[in-house]
Image 1 (cartoon, rainbow, N blue to C red):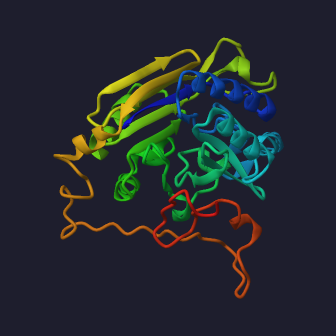
Image 2 (cartoon, helix red, strand yellow; image 1 turned 90 degrees about the vertical axis):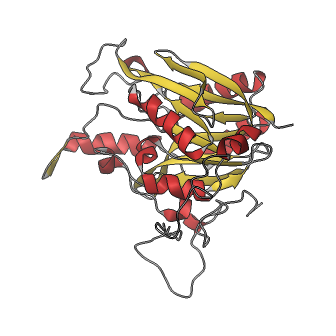
Length: 336
């Protein structure tokens, strides 16, 4: 059997209320599972939140005390990986008997990362991907990932899955690296709700001859605290992120969505043999490549500011399988 049901979930965080967001995530996971989905993708920064419209009191050459308090509040809403909130999401996956790809704000020390976490249907955390290139003002609040967290993992029965977060999808070298790992299902957690995002998702599906599952947040001002001083104003009905979640097949045809201006669970039945059918005339790192002309090298090892010779891995490097190996690929089997 090569046909399986997948889902993308369009929903928004309860900003700065991680417990409430996790509770809603559990409900939506159950909803997707009841519709038969065994791979479920949630948006970028869903757990921990995407603080759209905040400036964190920053100007060139100065920061404000109020902005530092905003960052503290944001840091407090982030999650540790591994940690109790990760275990909670794992339990959702186990109960649903589904793979889950979830966008989170990950806390390591006092640095935050925009991260995608991969959970198996047994509830285990199988891999993580930290966003390589935060965009514009995101660089103020998020650290940069490195090549040690670029997993494409075996996810039976779906084959090879991976993720690129929001504008990482505009990085040609990253796309080529993912194609080189044989990705068949491309997950794209995002908060980009512009019309052109749809063209991007269809382009990647057609270029990579892979299925693309893009989950975008739908966030209104009502889901934010009263003292959320965003540039869009305080009217509860104001839409901050309007959605646009979509599922696309390997020939660029839209299977579900896009949906705007509401919460939604989108599902589609995908035939994995369509990946092979699509690559008949275009395999970006196979017969359609020219390695005699172009070559891409990927630095797949973790980069740390401080390392101690003669010591084993520190605690922050344990608990997430498949990271930092020479080829940068996670098979989903390590550490189990």
